[in-house]
Amino acid sequence: MDKGTIRILMFPWLGYGHITPYLELAKKLTTRNFVICLCSTPANLSCIKQKISEKFAQTIQLVSLHLPTLPGLPPHLHTTNGLPLDLMPTLKVAFDMAEPEFANILSSIKPDLLIYDFLQPWAPLAASVQNIPAVEFITSSSTMTSFMFHYFKKPGIEFPFPNIYFREYESKLLNKLLACASDPQEKNRASEGVARSCKIVLIKGARKTEAKYIDYVTELVGKKFVPAGLLVQEPSLDNENSEIIEWLNKKEKKSTVFVSFGSEYFLSKQDTEEIAHGLELSNINFIWVVRFPKGVEHKLEETLPKGFLEIVRGRGLVIEGWAPQLKILGHENIGGFLSHCGWNSVLESMHFGVPIIALPMHLDQPINARFVEDIGVGVEVVRDSKGQLHRERLAEVIKQVVMEKSGESVREKADEIKVKISDKGDQEIDEIAAELVEVCNSGPSS
Ligand code: UDX
Image 1 (cartoon, rainbow, N blue to C red):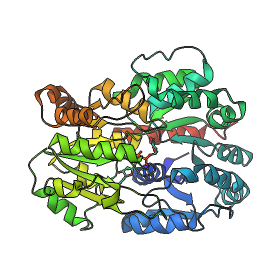
Image 2 (image 1 turned 30 degrees about the vertical axis):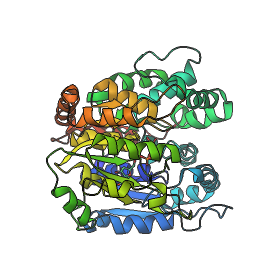
Image 3 (image 1 turned 180 degrees about the vertical axis):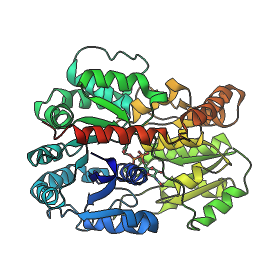
Image 4 (image 1 turned 135 degrees about the horizontal axis):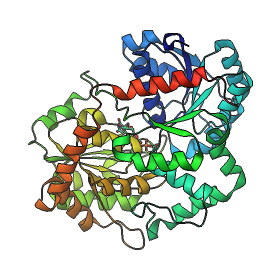
């Protein structure tokens, strides 16, 4: 089959950190003459339409999937500025219930290939019924994915990479993960797509930094895992949020920390307090994005410690809700990123060569934070044995990473990795394209 004739139906999960890598991959594949259809909910598609460039919009077909109405699920849910994590279980049920409609979409579009998200493990089964081959695309890190699969396949045996682990105070998170690994239903759900019904797995990340995890998970699962690249969007050139950039323009080179905890998580009151005091103690410039759950009454001044905004006036900028993260990380005056280590944020920071002050919260973030430290592009803010964050420790790590002599090697490593992982020749996309052609040539998944 000639790759120019391959039509791919992409079916991402609704989370912001899932949709954006799918769009980036779609953009790259269209440059290699693949024809892409992207399937999502109507509300989400209309937001996507507004966000993508006119040129890209002309090359991609958008296909609507209607979710059932369920109690607690907002009718026009979209992920433009994040998706509340607590909706996840209901949303999973809604997606599962949409399987028959998805099967109809498959039979009307008749794609040559389906690329689906690991959170929709039934999608490749629907495709195989219609003789359509499927490729899974995992938007989490290879480190986390190999860690998960290790515990699925070898419960009770230590993970072979000793720098990747959960800390004592994260044992609740680890127990949750292990319970999930031993629950047959969850185990099937999480491994079904990979183990049975897809040909290969694409995974967001780069071989240059994650080779050992990619090889290990390939061995564990018995399917080829192909790194899909960093898939970081180009920062937009529009004038939106220009006041933030103007503020940052006035600071010195690499002098300012960007503080953001992703698109799903909301900080606890205690962490908010410690972070505010830590930023204050560090004496370093910062831009902090503070998010609040939709529909919850709040006042920024009351959330932050009394007088905080006054004390940090001039050197600290607090933004409510959402900030242009890529524009900010790409700015030469940013010298550190205080991050929860969501996988997209880690890769974006590495892409721009910004060293990371790692403050993981939950899910895969502790593992991503250990990875960041292991490759040397960041320093973790370790909590006390009870899991409490301390302002003094946070201030110390911020100063170390941004300006002190003790953080020089981290800053150098961030610069070095930035160069190492840049894909100037677009070699990655050629390799992915060749893999996808091969999958289509070998027929439907069994
Ligand atoms: C979720 C999980 O929380 C995380 O553990 C997992 O690794 C990926 O899925 P999320 O919380 O959204 O991720 O964080 P992250 O993966 O870092 O993605 C956030 C995305 O939103 C980034 O692309 C970032 O650039 C963007 N963002 C976030 C903004 O553009 N502005 C903001 O103010 C906040």
